Amino acid sequence: MDRLNIAFIADKNFYLPSVVTLTSLFESCKKKSAYVIYYIAVDLTHSQKECIRELCRKSKSTVKIIEIDKGELQGRYSRFLKHDGCATISALIKFDLPYLCNDIDTLLYLDGDMIVKKDLSELAQIRLEDEYLAAVKDSGLLYSKTLISQEIESYFNSGLMLLNLKKMRIDAIPEALAEEKFKSTDNSLMDQHVLNKVFEDHVKFLGHEYNLLYVNLIRARYFYGLELKDINKMYGKDYCDWDDMLNQACIIHYSSFDKPWKYSDVSAVKIWDYYYQKSPFKNKKLHRKKLHISMLNKMRESNKLMALAANFIWECETKGFWNALKDVYKYLIRKN
Image (cartoon, rainbow, N blue to C red):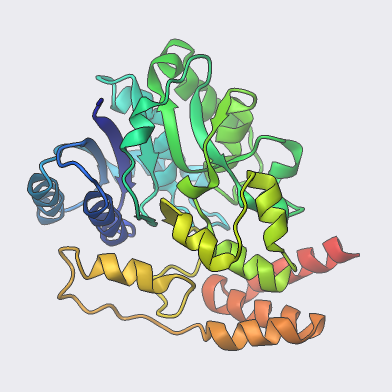
């Protein structure tokens, strides 16, 4: 079986969660040394990089650490330093993966806010011919009316991407991505809109289980009235309930603002905590806030006005007052 090349990108904000993701990847792997790790470090310390090396060594996985200077990155993309999303400017390094990992032809990229629950070795058997990548449809298509995703039928989430680096190098895709980014006026998702525009109609789709945006879906269930049947229809699944969807997941993606290392009561937090306790940080206490999710969900279930109030409370805590106010305004416009 081919070894699977897997890349991570981490700056100081995503170093800890990316190590937890790595831990879950190795814990869920059926066969040792099944992975080759490309860890792209943005201004990380020597001890942080040594932690990554030791974690990979214990799992008998090869690791290549590629160092990126944050000042150089910020200089290149200075106009995008201010943005509304939860991704940092380091996400734009995804555009350069074909050149940064120039010794391989295929690469699986994973965001650092994921938990890998099952072995991923089967992804090494996927062959990308004319496609630039394989990814999972973004479940935001089910409830978001404001994203550019509504213009692209095959809109994918960029948290997991199996990339055809060879074809991307031949077709000068990194340059095309950078050019599209500088033309873009929407900076809410940093990299995702641009990747979708450039790769439109050149995507192979993977099963929903490879990138489950569970926290987002639970919130959409209460706030937008999303039903399980809508998810089953979109992904060709037959989930019998919400727990079944969680159990079938290979990867859980905590992609929203309420990250499990910041808040102690987000959906599926116990799964993240389980792998945190197996990580090198197991003896480090996390200083987390509570979002009072159960209370907010009860508010959302009562009536539309209370649902709006609950979402505003959540967004004030996670995004700040003005961003929360802006999102409520967008919601009201959409409803009218």
